[in-house]
Length: 256
Image (cartoon, rainbow, N blue to C red):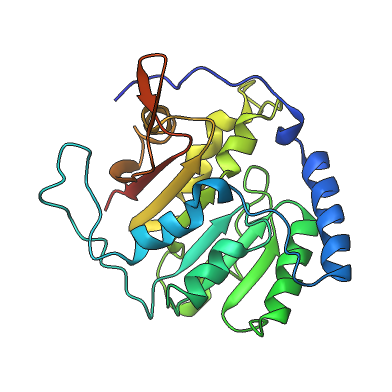
């Protein structure tokens, strides 16, 4: 594992809160006039949510690209596994896990955009899920401490946290922010440490990205409390003599 992080991305408007507030204001207006319009589902052209669902509900997951013959099991309890969706957007990933995945445990979707949270709540109401174990909260992973009301401490879950933390494009957005922390680092450099404390020991962090390769994600998230557990395979393409895929999903496991 590389000891240094990959090269930074150039900042863009997709890394600003203003951009996402404007986006979800637009999506809320569309949803109000047409409830079937739920806004954008990230990476829908790659069927990423379906791939993530398949990965989480399959009997096993590949430990590494070179160990496909003997795969360790995720062994997620359909009744009790808890999920945290970082940068939940319209909440579509959690709805899919509930409706098609059959997971019944605690689910929390968080986003720093109030419009996102409002949209997800309205969609939940339309699905009859309001107050049904799927909740959405306004929260900034890079600036705020986790809310005690949704971390699980009050439910007798020890140190709190979640069994599975999902990131579907959120690290991409953080990587595009030009903001720096108190140490003068780009804020994305502190993302891993912020995420580690949200997952239980032995739990999983599943990161999906269109900006980073699998190896680069391992460089950003490895080396601390998280170890590579598996990867999701997507259709691959060849261009200019190189083979790759349009998005990457890497599953990390927090050390016991």
